[in-house]
Length: 269
Image (cartoon, rainbow, N blue to C red; front, top):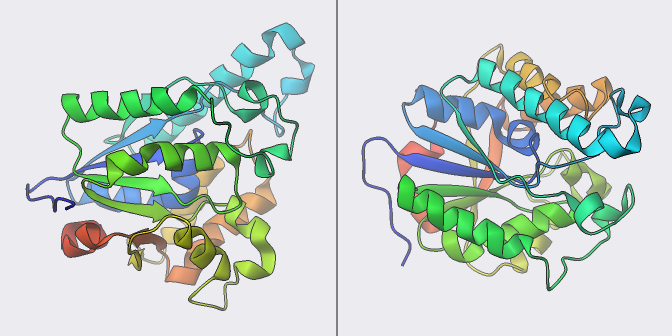
């Protein structure tokens, strides 16, 4: 049976397939957990990348592109840490899908996880090491909305590890919006989410993580804007404004052990 965390200060691990995913989908919740004196670690998984469509990367020689873009995105993480200085970040330094699986731009959403993808074992080994070094009480994983192959790989690789403790799935932004009418802001229950959860088994219920006031949308936009190499300004606005769907918060889908621990579902003080 999953264990319910019992310590005063909880250690929450957020799995971020790429450097920006945690901030895009869970920035306000992370801010709230830190304010509530919990420890939060973001594990960036596929952090070696040559993809930075909203940058000057196209001026770089192809031989230097990987190191240039990876360095640029590392600096973006450093900027997020200025906004969330108590956040801990770990970097798994794996290659993202366009490099690892040789899929073209946009094909990441139609490519299936490879059975022999060595990333799976590396993710699982890293999770075991982190838990041994700093006991992890709760895990937040990408749900895989939009079906980006890197998100699905991270989610699937971490399922067994997560099942022994409180865990939840976040709604991948902006990838979730690729489902269009299946992810509608006027509905509480989205067919895209129901379909994804049905593939995972287990019991999960929604929980809105509220760390909101009149500045919450602006704070979310500031976090999202850090990753300017990845999205344009209209998309930044869409991601930050999405929090209005939940009253200035963010929604996760949590297992019973998570829901039983009130400190996880109400991160703001």
